Length: 286
Image (cartoon, rainbow, N blue to C red; front, top):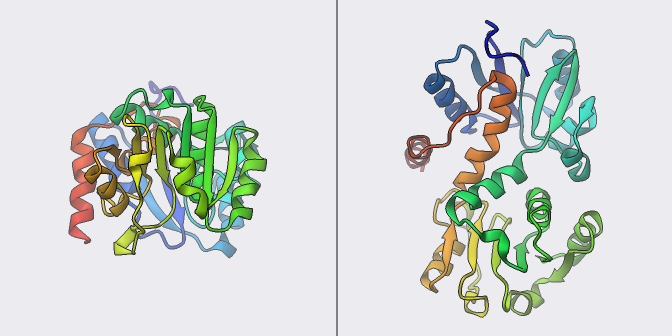
C-alpha cells in the first residue's frame, strides 16, 4: 500500500461484462469525495475474450490503474491470471479485488468479509449460533460458506436443488459443511440459528416458495445476499413470522471497503448517507 503522505493520484476500476449497472462507482466516488482524495474509480467493460489482455495491461502499467474490482463473469479468471492470490482467493478459486505491487497483480476476495461485516453491524452475535442453513450452491454461496465456517459455526447445511453441487462445496470447505437436497430443508432448519439465501430467488419479482421459519430457534437471524429489492420475499416471509432479518445491501458496501484502502490508502466509513444513496439509486432504476 502506498504511503498516504505521498502525492500519488490513483485510479481504480470495476470490470465485468456487462458492467453499466454496477453501483461500485457510486460507492467509491462517495468515499473519494468524503475523504477529499484525488483519484478516480470507473466502470470498465471487458469482454471474457479480452480479459487476459486487460490483466496484462495492469501488469505492464499501460492501463493506468492501481487496481480494481472484478465481477461476473471474470472472478475465476482474475484468480487464475493473478500473480499473488491470497489464501482466501485460493480456497474459493475466485478473486474480486486486485491491486498492483512491483508489477505483480495481487488478488483477494472480499465477498466473505462483506457478508460477515454486514451481519456484525446489523445483527451482532450472529456467529454464536451452532447451526447455519445456506440455501443455494452456486458461485455466490462459496464466499458465504467460507465466511460462516471461518467464524466458527460448527454445522453448516448447504441445501440445493442439485445436491451434487452442494457436495462439491462440502468437499471444498471441509467437515463442517454438509450437502442437503431441497427435500431436507425443513429438517435441517429445525433448531438452526442462521438462515442465508444465496440464490436468485425473489430477485426482480421471481416466485419464491413458502418457507416455514418457525422451526428455527426463536433468536434466529434470516439474511439474503440479494439486495434488489431491499426487502426480498424471503426476508418478508421471515419478518412476518417474527424473525430478525438482515438485508444484503450491507454486504455490497462492506466488501468494497478493503479494496478502497488498498488503492487509495485510507479506510473508508460505511455510513447511513452512503446506504441511502444506493437505496435512492435502486429506486430510480426500479
